[in-house]
Length: 307
Image (tube, rainbow, N blue to C red; front, top):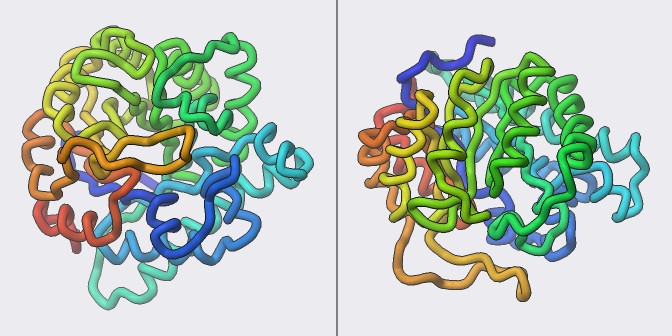
C-alpha cells in the first residue's frame, strides 16, 4: 500500500485510552489500554471504526504500552504477549475493512500505524513525560525490536514512534526502523517550546531524523496545544521532513493519581489545525483527551473527510 505523498494532508485519529475510559472502561492497571487487547478487543475495534467514520485516515494501534515484559508481568507468556501485539493490528485492519464496506462512495486509502511507545510507558509511572530513565541502548533495543517485528509481521502500513522523551531512545528506534526496512514517523514528547521531556534542545532531537530512510514525518504528540507552532517550525527546520502534530486535550498527566488534571485553560481546538499546517505539519490529529468528535471537526476544517 502506497503511503500518502509528501505534502499531502493526512488526518490522524485521536485519543485511544482516554476515549475508552470515557466509554466506561477501567484502564487503571499498568497495561493501560493494552489490557483490552486481551479482555475486550471489540471495544478497541469499535473505537478505531468511530475514528475512521469521523474522517481519520490513520488508525493507530493499541500497542503503545504493549511490550513483552509488560504483558509478562500481567501473567502472559512471551507467545501470548506477541500475539496480543499482533491482535492490535488485526483490530485496526478489521475496523478499516468495516469502514470501507459501509461506504457507498469512493474514498482514499486508510492506513494502520503500529504504535511504539517509549520505554517509560512500560514503567507506567509517567516517566515518558519526564525522560528520567536510561537503561542503555541494548535494553532499549531488546524491548522495542520484538514488538516492531510483531507489528510488521501483522501487516501495519507504517510505525508510529510516539511520545518519545529522549534523543537516546529516538536514536535506537530510528536504527531499528532502518534495520527492518520500514516506514514510520518520529514524534517527541516535549515539556515546552524548546526542549524534549528530558530537557534536551529540540533542534538536536529533531535533527537526528534528517536523512534517515523511511521517516515520513517528524514532530510532537501529547504536548500542550500552545507549544505546537514553535515546535513544528523547529522540527521542519532541523529534520527537513514533513511535520506531525497531535497534541493532547490541554490537561496534565498526574502519575501519582494516574489521571489527567485540568491545566491552565490551553485547550485542544480543531480550528487551529490550519495554523499547525502553516507551521509545517501535514500529519494532523489528537492525543490524550481528544475524541472522534474532535477529529471530525478537524477533518471537516482541513477538507479531508471524504478524500
